[in-house]
Length: 255
Ligand code: FES
Image 1: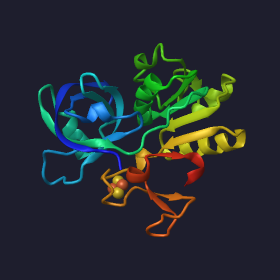
Image 2: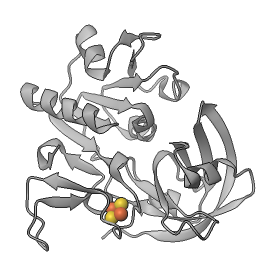
Image 3: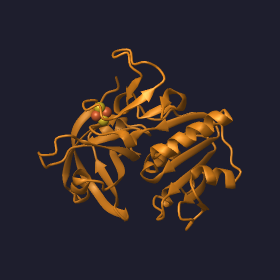
């Protein structure tokens, strides 16, 4: 298994980049130097009553300065506590966790939906191929600047306030796009639709199921997804998203 570390990271800076969505850069000791796109870290709350760490995907990696960026939505007490941290504060983290995306040199779609968009930033930076970013938002846009210069970008919004009205597949259709490989992260209905689209069109497809995670360290079993193959230990068709994923080949997972 890949090496992981438990560290006291220090907040470099934090800001709210959209309503309820925060961007935080963390200085790490070793984690950033080992991290790959599509992996995540788990963050511990200072409040001891919340024992389970919160898994959050890695948005950007600065390996040279051993810094990591996470972009997350405040969705409960844990993330609310993180959003109150400021420059110089420390926080216990574990990582890098999970398997990450395979980097292939094929014409690619990088598809992110909502809070599944952040991991696409580092993936776009590291992939060496023709890249088409297809980003789906409810209404307000965020992380737009980060993708500039990394490939072509297409946006879909549910309310049609920007780009294609509808979802990411509507944007692909409207713009007449095609690709040889798909990398995607976002809500389960979006991933399910992308899996069907990929299979129907014979496109290699990798899905990050991180939305389903809870403890992030293999302990709570809240993250199991149905898989095609039987787990060799338990002999059931389950996989833990945080341990065996969060990135899976589309054919491997059942929705
Ligand atoms: Fe707890 Fe995977 S999130 S076991």
